[in-house]
Image (cartoon, rainbow, N blue to C red; front, side):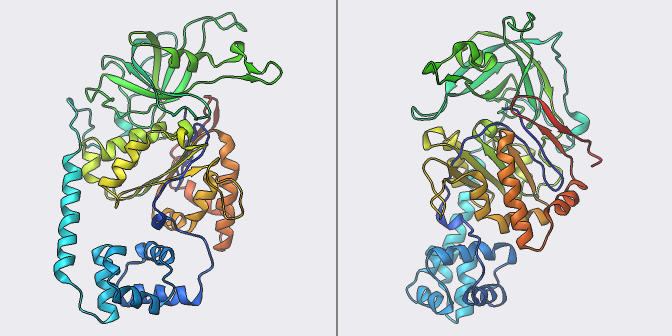
Length: 450
């Protein structure tokens, strides 16, 4: 799954499509016209209870889920002792004070201490790499970025460490996590791609098979934390012949099948790394990262999120923004790396959020299938606000996913009195732009000057 990357105030990437969604209901922001009661409640929260504008929509969303529509409902919840169970301490303390009651300072202090302990434990759970592959300073990426060390005429002869199926039996297709040993000779950074040259001769050209590009699904330290490996997330490409009623082996994906069938020790020729625009903005650690993926488009984000939340790195220590992952798959069995995302969300809910869209299991309010653009539409207001504050947004999947997303963003922009084309143009002026399709063909490329 190779990324399509778009950036401006947006950084976008493409890789593979299918859809999903699993986020606690309270984290879902719904698009609707604010009622007078909601407006009044918003004013109370911001002016009286001291809720910051950045978080007021999340508080209102919780109120919506609990059917708290006005101040009377909020006071009822207070009198029932429910506020401390619904909101974080700093929020319910402010609401209690604004409603005129004496908050339970002891309980609040205990909750604050528990949160501090949870953050400390999350930091302690991070793992150390056995080598250092950091730039100096760590965020100075481009001058230190490895590029095209190994080329098709002289690839690096690596070998397979492991190949593991990572989807359930009901997933529509097989996806494997493939770990490759490079003995540390192929350095790369998160967001780059690896070229794979499958063995054999192309029947059409009569020449050796050409390079296929895949987004790298590990950090620069590799899954071994020694900097000796690189990992890929690969969907086995097959072709179903309707007339034959079975798969046609003559039309299967050469490289994906080679990788998914590989066993430990299998030789594999690799090239690269390539790519210099699908990178994290580590020089601005307070910036939010909004990552949108379908299927194996999750690959580059695994590298991002492991660097920020799993490994003990300068980037993880400095990160103060929100990493928000939108992931789309067809059914629950097709969820990729879900255990990793849930573990991160449990350890650090203030800085990581995951939202799934499962197209064959979830429906919209009108009964239609829930696709990734529909799930994003539920959060559109917050997404636009975060973009206005400097967030980077990435899209990774087959290019066919983009029309629906673009249409949704245009509609939301229009509802805000903004022309989406103008908005996108403004965003592009401040950030790099590039596109790469899942299959490796370059759709668009422009320099950082854009």
